[in-house]
Image (cartoon, rainbow, N blue to C red; front, side, top):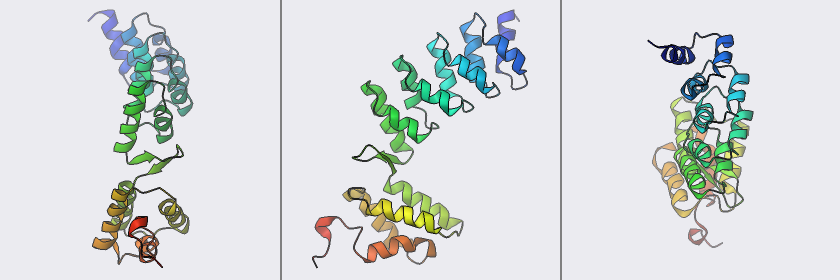
Amino acid sequence: MNTISKLYLQAGRSSTSAKTLATLTNAACEKIRTRVAENRSTPPHLLQFLSKDESSDVRIAVASNSATPAIVLWSLASDYNPDVRLSMAENHNLPAAILTWLSGDENPYVAIRAEKTLATNGYKINDKGEIVMSATKIERTLRRMLSRKERLSKADAKRLRDLILEDGYFSRSERKVVRNAIENDLLDDPAFEVFLDLYLNDQLRPKDERTIA
């Protein structure tokens, strides 16, 4: 096995010391530096150093590493190379706030990809540019709580209430998702009381379906 191959394997091992990894961050071989950037055992300060590497592949590896500090991810979200930003927009494990930032990227491919990733993760961006949970994610979250037989805390109940009542929060199809969940099997659970009173008060129906007082 040649020297480069040995160093590559060393760069990817979780048992490799921080001192050795620090040395490898300056390796002439791009693949070795990329391997260090991928290693979840690489210390944060070395990941920050590699986030400024001349190679976009190394910076992409840093952005995909779950051990990379948020401050480094935010810096990479503004990387001059759109390939780096696109790789981040495709990453379902990134914080929603960073994906939201990328959804406003000047590169349309990055922006559209970030929006799709947010949607897949159960989020959407409202008319104010704020990230909010979709109706489907709210329902999934609630069902998960119910399966554990938990009750909504007062703080959670208030937050959900505010989200639902926010003007323009749900589209017609999303309101239907919530209404169906209420009507099907969640009515009797105490954790669902926050939705029940809204439903009974006609708050979840589209405006053109509400009863005229």
